[in-house]
Length: 153
Image (cartoon, rainbow, N blue to C red; front, side, top):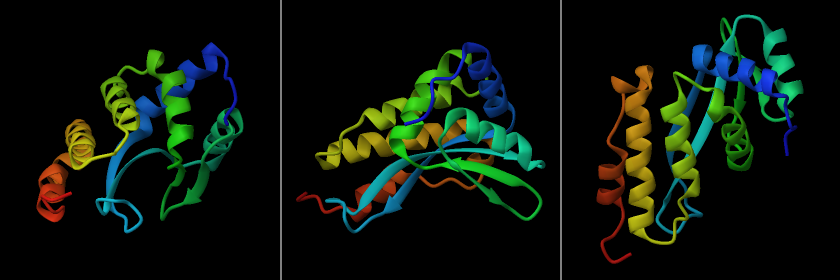
């Protein structure tokens, strides 16, 4: 899973993520999960030129590249890949260091009870508050899960 990237390249990639990237928490309905929800982390980097993202994908050996209307996105939703990347990049992140710390805490939560799911959802809510684009359109996912999950679970 992924490559071991040199210190200089990790610092450069962290700078790209700080400037044009996102570390996000997603709360999704999921019928296969015991409580009907799952909390996932997603990492994304957007650029106008695809060659930067192709370089990134080659360097870290994870993620995929997609074309948007006016930009290209490098994206990974694989939780193990994200954990691996965040561990490597966290020492070099400046702007998104707190998001990385929260994302790692979310990834460490093993959901075995409603309490665990709510803990992950509260961390996801805290992470979304740190993302400027999420502030105005965010939901309180912990409250949404509390309403949807039976108190008997």
